[in-house]
Image 1 (cartoon, rainbow, N blue to C red):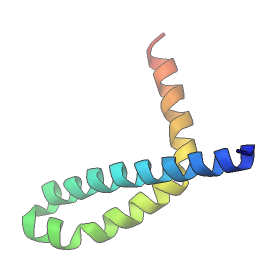
Image 2 (image 1 turned 180 degrees about the vertical axis):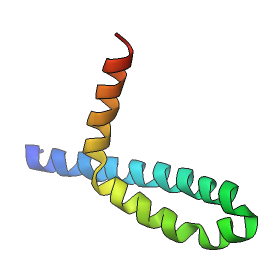
Image 3 (image 1 turned 90 degrees about the vertical axis):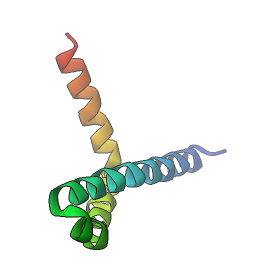
Length: 74
């Protein structure tokens, strides 16, 4: 495999994992904040928007998480 293929495959895998985790987390937050009716019924829409934006930027999230880990485990 070429390095471009490996990077593309890695980015897509990170995108998928990040999207699922952020979507579920924000949807649970919507349910807890707005109740069952609005949280389940309408909470999926803002959750999908937030998850898509976060998934596109997942490399920045990994770098920020690594920096926070290093900063607070000194």
